[in-house]
Amino acid sequence: MTRSEPTGPLAGTLIVDLTRVLAGPFSTMVLADLGARVIKVEAPGRGDDARAIGPFINGESAYFASLNRGKESLALDLADRGDKAILFDLLARADVLVENFRPGALARLGLGWEVLRARFPRLILASASGFGQTGPWATRPAYDIIVQAMGGLMSVTGPEGGPPVRVGTSIGDIAAGLFAAIGILAALHDRARTGLGAHVDVAMFDCQLAILENAIARYAATGTDPCPLGTRHPSITPFQAFRAKDGMLVIAAGNDPLWQALVRALGAPALGEDPRFATNRGRTEYHAALEAEVNAILAQRTVGEWLARLEAEGVPAGPLNRVSDALSTPQAAARQMLVDTALADGTPLRVAGNPVKLSTHADSPTRPPAPALDAHRGPILAWLGRGAGR
Image 1 (cartoon, helix red, strand yellow):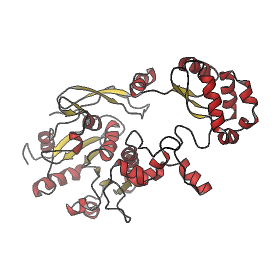
Image 2: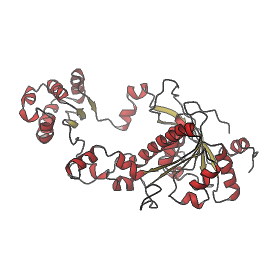
Image 3: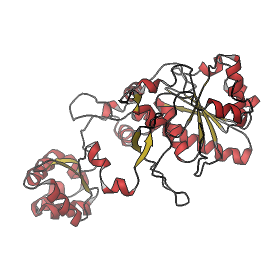
């Protein structure tokens, strides 16, 4: 199978990808979208676990395809001496090795950081795991829902007064994937100065703590655990979803001038004169009363009518879109946030585009397909000088 040379700011960077499922593959997908060559090393016979995760099209995982578009696949048994020799040949040419095994697993395969650093001093090793390479929880297994729960995120997500709710996308894995990509880019930059690789250690749990932002600030300031508030912001009001005549919309009046603009858009001067709502602190203290007043006014017109009025006054607002609504917006089209790729068998598939836009590199409307398991064995082995065999 032939491949086209990647283009982009990371063109010429070789990533050897031992990862599976989501956190690691998401990280290497980001790097591939930025032009890195990614060789995905998978277990013989079964490959990445995500190949068996739906939804499926013609028996192929669209989930796997969306995360692994544009990568190459090579099946290696890392416990086999011959296959490990092939991996070492790859690492001799690689810039980065990415893995998301449980800590200690790579060392048991003879691929620990000390071994890799001694043999390949310029190599960057990036490890994404549930709890990191150190600490009392390092060897615990983890999935997205585990770190959402243990990292505090679920405790602040959901309806006010209701049970905790998992965030509707796998933010535990995705945050770790993004932070891993940032760490890899930082290590590549540092290597240009020092000539030496580094071990990038990213924990899903740590990443959940890192994105708690306002929740940590509230706890530090008050000593009280934050609770779920539905769509409402804990310290900015009004900043939430409201119900109009025919559906939901979201309004974010983030300061006093925007509050006055909202009052004008609503045609409700009495709200602007109410001393309870004169400041953001007061609006937040009396949020229930304010929400009731605003909902009563919004119920008189449609979402479309209100959005036109709010836009005219410069109030940040938007409809509460479904996924299909968001994907079909002219903004998503203008920003090329839905791109074309394919399953390994050539079946077309539309996936999310790259949100990083660079003035120096074109953002292609297509992505190469995800690979079939071991699809690139011949070309990779030939490139390594091993011919078509081992």
